[in-house]
Structure formats: C-alpha cells, structure tokens
Image 1 (cartoon, one colour):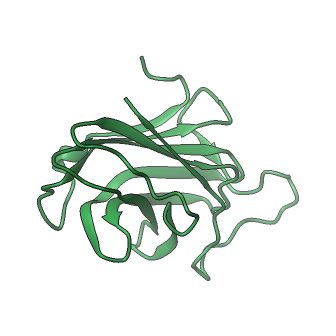
Image 2 (cartoon, helix red, strand yellow):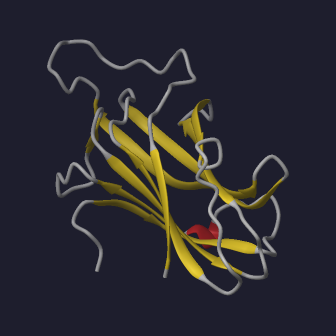
Length: 168
C-alpha cells in the first residue's frame, strides 16, 4: 500500500544507467512528503524522504548511498552522501534492503528538480547509478508569507539531511 503522501515512485528500469550493475542494483526509488499534505504538492520547507530499495547481487563488504539534485536545465543544485557522515552501510550477501534520506526542510525555489541516485564504494567506484531516478516539483517557495522567495540561481544549495538503512 502506498502512503497518501507519496510524491513519486519511479519506474527506474527505463532510466539511464552509465553501466550495468553487477554487485548491487537500485530496485526502486520513492519520494514521500513527510509534511503529509496528502497530495503530490510540495512547498519550500516541507519535509521529504527519499527511499531507495536495493538488492545485493554478490558479496559486498560495504557501500554508501548518495543523491545529486539537478534543476530542469540540468544544473547541479545539491549533493549528499551517506559516507561523509560516518553512515557507510554494511550488509551481507543476498539481502534486500532500503536506505532512507530524510530532508527536514527542502529549501528550493519553485520549479522541477531531478534526483540522480547512486550506490558506491566511497571514493572508489559507483556500483549502480540511475540518472533522473525521481523528480520533485516545488509549487510554492514562500512558506512564511514574507514575499521573499528561495533562489537557486547561485547553486549549489546546502540541504540538511539524515541517512538511515534497514534490511528487509
């Protein structure tokens, strides 16, 4: 059952991958609006969660997850990785699992954005990388009613987030 606040559940099998994964594969990506508006509408400062489902294909001692956020013109806006924060995820062979990245307040201007999702051996290689794995549309950028709008013209933007993982 999908949550009422599901923004997008990407069918990533048709999305571009720079190389065919052999050790781990990204099986699904979802964006969920944690502010729980009950729709796909997202405003600046809403809380969202990126959920990455994966499957290990072979023995793998460890890996990390990351995302790259780009605007509709392809300009890199922000990047986050689980490894710099000491959250490298360890799992045994043959497991399915999920990785979640919670963004407590998304500070973006009105517009459409795309998340590239990667699983990697940190600072060595991408194990799987999906371009435009999911998208997000910000419909309002003045959550406090001040008349001031977020501006991402001077990218990159700092986006606070928290990474977690579980085995299913």
